[in-house]
Image (cartoon, rainbow, N blue to C red):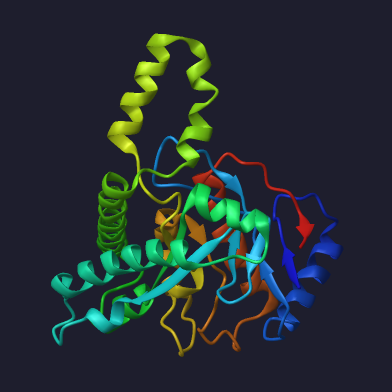
Length: 285
């Protein structure tokens, strides 16, 4: 059971306090979890955002209903040198391998739901779940409240996105681009030869094989398997690089209060709102 909580919804203060207290009390109960209104985005500018109205149970990633995802996980900590620097000569090939393996698994998987079978063919969705960015900051001894730390993390995740996009684009050149682009372009192609030519050029310049690539969890702003230090919440803006958002948590928040729990979700919600103009609707999934 997943409770989608929207801080913009007009609720009486006493009722809101009660809701957050109950969610806080149930934070470690399985299978109960609090998730946020979210959309799924695409690194391809030609494909629109989609409402994330369902949740992948294994990773707590918010996705469109009846969509088909191939998931893999990359732990940044495994690519750290002793001096705290990342081994990009190892990280980049690992990211590329996730894209290649995900492409193969889409071809091999036979989904039970026919709608997922169609979505797999149409969108080729990947969820490359990049973990450990809070751990990275902690192991380096960087100040999580410093703007320079956030900028460095932003640069890293931007690099990760570029590597994933490059791998997807390479597969688009050999295997064909994501079929969803033809669906998105169907309305454009009705507007005459000039618009048709512009769209085709845009597809040539921007087409990827996969509609979605990178998954991040806002909980990974905190070092895993340790106390969730509030200072690390300054790293939360990094989640704007994600194409899909997971609410998977490993950090210890046992010393938090219901107010702290609410403040965390409100901050994440504000960041996600800035990433999309999609309407936020409170609902229980």
